[in-house]
Length: 232
Image (cartoon, rainbow, N blue to C red; front, side, top):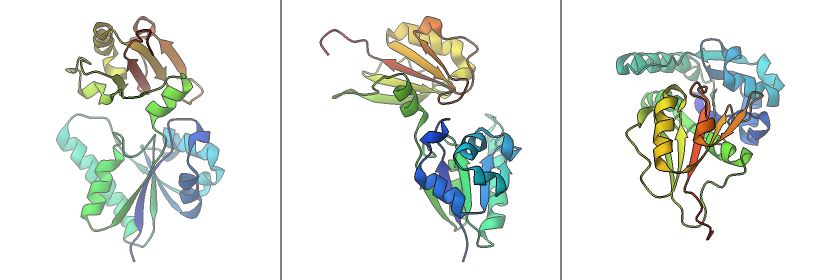
């Protein structure tokens, strides 16, 4: 019998937003993988350990996921991560890989899961609360009503998109290109709110494009909505 790889979302930052299923998997399994070079320093660990103090007693496996746009280097890192996790899986041990938000939304974990699955191991995804749903909730902002469309865009990769489709937008991973993102938002005429570090102690909310700092952090998420016309 070989082990199962679980990709478990821990939510966006507030430990109270972790699911009961993610908590149970941490409690029931010994091997916990975390995306980073030092497991205890990762944001996923710092969130989860507040909800599950027993996490500190588990066998923690750091999985380095350095930021790069070099495809070959990225592939090497993902192959190395899969090799590390396979050592435990082939011994029959389950591995719970903790990742921010929901593992199905722009998660680097997915690249590792594909490799593990291709090697014949069972993999399972455990849904978590997404950053944009949490950001909408903390700003008291509905993401979509009635027949409105909702577009979720990784802004750092899609700066060619001028937000011209009807409906509301979520712009993820905006931090490193904030100057350009703000220019696009200004042109769009949409109502804008940004949440930085949603659910964490250093959370900040900015309402209006002009309030958004150019040096916003990596965990910055923008909601851009069609302006209300007075008939809603």
